[in-house]
Image (cartoon, rainbow, N blue to C red; front, side, top):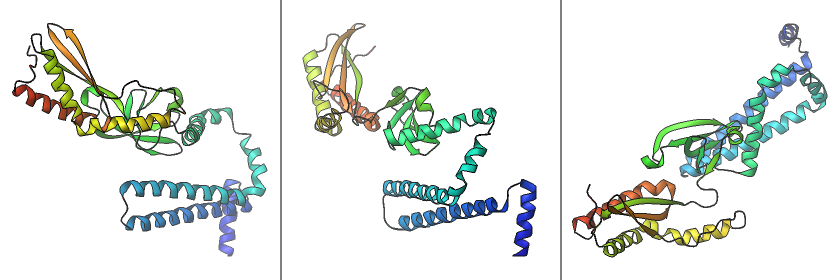
Length: 291
Protein backbone atom coordinates (compact mmCIF):
# COMPACT_ATOMS: atom_id res chain seq x y z
CA UNK A 1 0.00 0.00 0.00
CA UNK A 2 2.86 2.37 0.83
CA UNK A 3 4.49 1.60 -2.49
CA UNK A 4 1.23 2.45 -4.27
CA UNK A 5 1.03 5.77 -2.42
CA UNK A 6 4.63 6.57 -3.33
CA UNK A 7 3.89 5.72 -6.97
CA UNK A 8 0.77 7.89 -6.99
CA UNK A 9 2.57 10.80 -5.35
CA UNK A 10 5.38 10.54 -7.89
CA UNK A 11 2.84 10.52 -10.73
CA UNK A 12 1.08 13.54 -9.20
CA UNK A 13 4.34 15.47 -9.03
CA UNK A 14 5.10 14.64 -12.68
CA UNK A 15 1.65 15.42 -14.12
CA UNK A 16 0.09 17.81 -11.64
CA UNK A 17 -2.96 15.53 -11.33
CA UNK A 18 -3.98 14.99 -7.72
CA UNK A 19 -4.56 11.52 -6.30
CA UNK A 20 -8.35 11.74 -6.34
CA UNK A 21 -8.44 12.31 -10.09
CA UNK A 22 -5.77 9.67 -10.64
CA UNK A 23 -7.88 7.07 -8.84
CA UNK A 24 -10.92 8.00 -10.92
CA UNK A 25 -8.88 7.70 -14.12
CA UNK A 26 -7.64 4.24 -13.12
CA UNK A 27 -11.18 3.12 -12.20
CA UNK A 28 -12.51 4.47 -15.52
CA UNK A 29 -9.86 2.56 -17.47
CA UNK A 30 -10.61 -0.63 -15.55
CA UNK A 31 -14.34 -0.24 -16.23
CA UNK A 32 -13.70 0.20 -19.96
CA UNK A 33 -11.41 -2.85 -20.09
CA UNK A 34 -13.78 -5.06 -18.06
CA UNK A 35 -16.94 -4.12 -20.02
CA UNK A 36 -15.17 -4.53 -23.37
CA UNK A 37 -13.80 -7.91 -22.23
CA UNK A 38 -17.29 -9.06 -21.21
CA UNK A 39 -18.63 -7.86 -24.56
CA UNK A 40 -16.00 -9.89 -26.43
CA UNK A 41 -16.76 -13.00 -24.38
CA UNK A 42 -20.50 -12.65 -25.10
CA UNK A 43 -19.77 -12.24 -28.81
CA UNK A 44 -17.56 -15.34 -28.86
CA UNK A 45 -20.22 -17.39 -27.05
CA UNK A 46 -22.83 -16.26 -29.57
CA UNK A 47 -20.59 -17.11 -32.53
CA UNK A 48 -20.03 -20.65 -31.23
CA UNK A 49 -23.65 -21.44 -32.04
CA UNK A 50 -24.86 -21.98 -35.60
CA UNK A 51 -25.85 -18.46 -36.68
CA UNK A 52 -25.65 -16.86 -40.11
CA UNK A 53 -22.94 -14.32 -40.84
CA UNK A 54 -25.57 -11.58 -41.01
CA UNK A 55 -26.98 -12.49 -37.58
CA UNK A 56 -23.48 -12.55 -36.09
CA UNK A 57 -22.72 -9.11 -37.55
CA UNK A 58 -25.96 -7.59 -36.20
CA UNK A 59 -25.41 -9.17 -32.78
CA UNK A 60 -21.85 -7.78 -32.62
CA UNK A 61 -23.07 -4.29 -33.56
CA UNK A 62 -25.81 -4.35 -30.91
CA UNK A 63 -23.46 -5.74 -28.28
CA UNK A 64 -20.89 -3.01 -28.99
CA UNK A 65 -23.58 -0.32 -28.84
CA UNK A 66 -24.92 -1.59 -25.50
CA UNK A 67 -21.43 -1.90 -24.00
CA UNK A 68 -20.59 1.67 -25.09
CA UNK A 69 -23.80 2.99 -23.50
CA UNK A 70 -22.99 1.15 -20.26
CA UNK A 71 -19.45 2.57 -20.27
CA UNK A 72 -20.65 6.15 -20.82
CA UNK A 73 -23.38 5.85 -18.17
CA UNK A 74 -21.02 4.28 -15.59
CA UNK A 75 -18.23 6.80 -16.15
CA UNK A 76 -20.75 9.65 -15.96
CA UNK A 77 -21.84 8.40 -12.52
CA UNK A 78 -18.24 8.07 -11.33
CA UNK A 79 -17.25 11.56 -12.50
CA UNK A 80 -20.57 13.27 -11.71
CA UNK A 81 -19.23 15.28 -8.73
CA UNK A 82 -16.28 16.55 -10.78
CA UNK A 83 -18.08 17.47 -14.01
CA UNK A 84 -18.18 21.19 -13.18
CA UNK A 85 -14.40 21.23 -12.74
CA UNK A 86 -13.90 19.35 -16.00
CA UNK A 87 -16.16 21.81 -17.88
CA UNK A 88 -14.09 24.68 -16.48
CA UNK A 89 -10.88 23.03 -17.70
CA UNK A 90 -12.34 22.33 -21.12
CA UNK A 91 -13.43 25.97 -21.46
CA UNK A 92 -9.75 26.98 -21.43
CA UNK A 93 -8.89 24.87 -24.46
CA UNK A 94 -7.25 27.10 -27.03
CA UNK A 95 -8.82 28.05 -30.36
CA UNK A 96 -6.13 26.05 -32.13
CA UNK A 97 -7.16 22.85 -30.35
CA UNK A 98 -10.81 23.56 -31.18
CA UNK A 99 -9.96 23.86 -34.88
CA UNK A 100 -7.93 20.64 -34.71
CA UNK A 101 -10.90 18.84 -33.17
CA UNK A 102 -13.39 20.27 -35.66
CA UNK A 103 -13.36 17.23 -37.96
CA UNK A 104 -13.64 14.82 -35.02
CA UNK A 105 -16.66 16.70 -33.64
CA UNK A 106 -18.25 16.96 -37.11
CA UNK A 107 -17.79 13.21 -37.67
CA UNK A 108 -19.38 12.44 -34.31
CA UNK A 109 -22.42 14.61 -35.04
CA UNK A 110 -22.67 13.15 -38.55
CA UNK A 111 -22.54 9.68 -36.99
CA UNK A 112 -25.48 10.58 -34.72
CA UNK A 113 -27.35 11.90 -37.78
CA UNK A 114 -26.72 8.67 -39.71
CA UNK A 115 -28.01 6.58 -36.80
CA UNK A 116 -31.09 8.77 -36.28
CA UNK A 117 -32.13 9.82 -39.82
CA UNK A 118 -30.86 6.62 -41.49
CA UNK A 119 -29.97 8.06 -44.93
CA UNK A 120 -28.44 4.61 -45.49
CA UNK A 121 -27.90 1.36 -43.61
CA UNK A 122 -25.65 -1.68 -43.67
CA UNK A 123 -25.94 -3.62 -46.97
CA UNK A 124 -27.32 -0.57 -48.85
CA UNK A 125 -25.61 0.29 -52.11
CA UNK A 126 -24.66 3.96 -52.02
CA UNK A 127 -22.57 6.50 -53.90
CA UNK A 128 -20.76 9.26 -52.00
CA UNK A 129 -19.15 11.77 -54.33
CA UNK A 130 -17.32 9.62 -56.87
CA UNK A 131 -17.17 6.53 -54.64
CA UNK A 132 -19.73 3.74 -54.98
CA UNK A 133 -20.14 0.56 -52.98
CA UNK A 134 -22.10 -1.55 -50.50
CA UNK A 135 -22.11 -0.39 -46.87
CA UNK A 136 -20.49 -3.04 -44.67
CA UNK A 137 -19.98 -1.14 -41.40
CA UNK A 138 -21.15 2.07 -39.70
CA UNK A 139 -19.51 3.42 -36.56
CA UNK A 140 -19.34 6.70 -34.65
CA UNK A 141 -16.55 8.28 -36.73
CA UNK A 142 -16.81 6.71 -40.18
CA UNK A 143 -18.47 4.11 -42.34
CA UNK A 144 -16.94 1.48 -44.62
CA UNK A 145 -18.12 0.45 -48.07
CA UNK A 146 -17.13 -2.46 -50.29
CA UNK A 147 -16.26 -0.72 -53.55
CA UNK A 148 -18.04 -1.63 -56.79
CA UNK A 149 -17.28 -0.62 -60.37
CA UNK A 150 -19.31 1.67 -62.61
CA UNK A 151 -22.34 0.74 -64.73
CA UNK A 152 -20.12 -0.03 -67.73
CA UNK A 153 -18.29 -2.68 -65.69
CA UNK A 154 -21.49 -4.15 -64.29
CA UNK A 155 -21.01 -2.66 -60.81
CA UNK A 156 -19.05 -5.70 -59.75
CA UNK A 157 -17.23 -5.67 -56.41
CA UNK A 158 -13.54 -4.77 -56.56
CA UNK A 159 -12.89 -6.36 -53.16
CA UNK A 160 -11.56 -3.05 -51.84
CA UNK A 161 -13.00 -1.69 -48.57
CA UNK A 162 -13.05 2.12 -48.43
CA UNK A 163 -13.24 4.04 -45.14
CA UNK A 164 -15.27 7.27 -45.46
CA UNK A 165 -15.56 9.85 -42.65
CA UNK A 166 -19.14 10.43 -41.54
CA UNK A 167 -18.85 14.15 -42.30
CA UNK A 168 -18.71 13.30 -46.03
CA UNK A 169 -22.51 13.05 -46.09
CA UNK A 170 -22.64 16.82 -45.44
CA UNK A 171 -20.04 17.81 -48.03
CA UNK A 172 -20.67 15.28 -50.84
CA UNK A 173 -23.81 14.27 -52.71
CA UNK A 174 -25.22 10.95 -51.51
CA UNK A 175 -27.03 8.44 -53.72
CA UNK A 176 -28.84 5.52 -52.12
CA UNK A 177 -29.90 2.66 -54.38
CA UNK A 178 -32.07 1.07 -51.67
CA UNK A 179 -33.62 3.79 -49.50
CA UNK A 180 -37.17 3.67 -50.95
CA UNK A 181 -37.06 0.28 -52.66
CA UNK A 182 -34.45 -2.26 -53.68
CA UNK A 183 -34.74 -2.07 -57.45
CA UNK A 184 -33.41 0.19 -60.19
CA UNK A 185 -34.29 0.64 -63.85
CA UNK A 186 -31.69 -0.97 -66.07
CA UNK A 187 -31.35 -0.68 -69.83
CA UNK A 188 -29.58 -2.68 -72.51
CA UNK A 189 -29.44 -2.03 -76.25
CA UNK A 190 -29.92 -4.64 -78.95
CA UNK A 191 -29.29 -3.69 -82.58
CA UNK A 192 -30.86 -5.45 -85.59
CA UNK A 193 -30.48 -4.90 -89.32
CA UNK A 194 -32.62 -2.27 -91.00
CA UNK A 195 -34.43 -4.83 -93.16
CA UNK A 196 -35.17 -7.16 -90.21
CA UNK A 197 -38.75 -8.02 -89.26
CA UNK A 198 -39.23 -5.47 -86.49
CA UNK A 199 -42.38 -6.99 -85.00
CA UNK A 200 -40.92 -10.50 -84.97
CA UNK A 201 -37.66 -9.28 -83.38
CA UNK A 202 -39.45 -7.17 -80.81
CA UNK A 203 -41.87 -9.95 -79.86
CA UNK A 204 -38.98 -12.37 -79.45
CA UNK A 205 -37.15 -9.89 -77.22
CA UNK A 206 -40.28 -9.46 -75.08
CA UNK A 207 -40.54 -13.23 -74.82
CA UNK A 208 -36.91 -13.49 -73.65
CA UNK A 209 -37.13 -10.68 -71.12
CA UNK A 210 -40.49 -11.77 -69.70
CA UNK A 211 -39.41 -15.35 -69.08
CA UNK A 212 -36.37 -14.31 -67.04
CA UNK A 213 -37.10 -15.56 -63.50
CA UNK A 214 -35.48 -12.61 -61.74
CA UNK A 215 -37.16 -9.90 -63.85
CA UNK A 216 -40.67 -11.34 -63.89
CA UNK A 217 -40.84 -11.56 -60.07
CA UNK A 218 -39.97 -7.89 -59.49
CA UNK A 219 -43.14 -5.93 -60.49
CA UNK A 220 -45.19 -7.53 -57.67
CA UNK A 221 -42.42 -6.83 -55.16
CA UNK A 222 -42.08 -3.29 -56.52
CA UNK A 223 -45.81 -2.63 -56.07
CA UNK A 224 -45.50 -3.44 -52.37
CA UNK A 225 -42.32 -1.38 -52.03
CA UNK A 226 -43.96 1.64 -53.69
CA UNK A 227 -46.96 1.41 -51.37
CA UNK A 228 -44.62 1.36 -48.36
CA UNK A 229 -42.53 4.27 -49.69
CA UNK A 230 -45.45 6.46 -50.81
CA UNK A 231 -46.00 7.85 -47.30
CA UNK A 232 -42.45 9.26 -47.22
CA UNK A 233 -41.62 9.96 -50.87
CA UNK A 234 -43.56 11.34 -53.85
CA UNK A 235 -42.60 8.45 -56.13
CA UNK A 236 -44.84 6.76 -58.66
CA UNK A 237 -44.52 4.78 -61.90
CA UNK A 238 -47.26 4.22 -64.49
CA UNK A 239 -45.71 0.97 -65.62
CA UNK A 240 -43.48 -1.48 -63.76
CA UNK A 241 -43.30 -4.16 -66.45
CA UNK A 242 -40.40 -4.45 -68.92
CA UNK A 243 -40.74 -2.27 -72.01
CA UNK A 244 -38.84 -2.10 -75.28
CA UNK A 245 -38.27 1.16 -77.19
CA UNK A 246 -37.45 1.31 -80.91
CA UNK A 247 -35.07 3.81 -82.53
CA UNK A 248 -33.36 4.25 -85.88
CA UNK A 249 -29.61 4.71 -85.40
CA UNK A 250 -26.87 4.79 -88.12
CA UNK A 251 -28.55 2.58 -90.73
CA UNK A 252 -29.86 0.00 -88.26
CA UNK A 253 -32.68 -0.48 -85.76
CA UNK A 254 -31.84 -0.18 -82.09
CA UNK A 255 -34.07 -1.69 -79.41
CA UNK A 256 -33.68 -0.43 -75.85
CA UNK A 257 -34.78 -3.01 -73.28
CA UNK A 258 -35.80 -1.33 -70.03
CA UNK A 259 -36.56 -3.39 -66.93
CA UNK A 260 -36.41 -3.37 -63.14
CA UNK A 261 -33.64 -5.29 -61.40
CA UNK A 262 -31.84 -5.44 -58.08
CA UNK A 263 -28.53 -3.54 -58.51
CA UNK A 264 -26.54 -6.50 -57.18
CA UNK A 265 -28.13 -8.83 -59.75
CA UNK A 266 -28.00 -6.49 -62.74
CA UNK A 267 -24.94 -7.99 -64.40
CA UNK A 268 -26.06 -11.62 -64.09
CA UNK A 269 -29.49 -10.70 -65.51
CA UNK A 270 -27.94 -8.90 -68.51
CA UNK A 271 -25.62 -11.88 -69.02
CA UNK A 272 -28.61 -14.28 -69.06
CA UNK A 273 -30.56 -12.05 -71.45
CA UNK A 274 -27.66 -11.84 -73.92
CA UNK A 275 -27.20 -15.61 -73.88
CA UNK A 276 -30.86 -16.09 -74.82
CA UNK A 277 -30.70 -13.34 -77.48
CA UNK A 278 -27.63 -14.92 -79.07
CA UNK A 279 -29.32 -18.34 -79.10
CA UNK A 280 -32.37 -16.89 -80.85
CA UNK A 281 -30.12 -15.08 -83.34
CA UNK A 282 -28.38 -18.36 -84.15
CA UNK A 283 -31.81 -19.89 -84.82
CA UNK A 284 -32.62 -17.02 -87.18
CA UNK A 285 -35.34 -15.50 -84.98
CA UNK A 286 -33.45 -12.25 -84.37
CA UNK A 287 -31.41 -10.61 -87.15
CA UNK A 288 -28.63 -8.97 -85.10
CA UNK A 289 -26.90 -6.03 -86.73
CA UNK A 290 -23.35 -6.64 -87.94
CA UNK A 291 -21.21 -3.63 -88.76
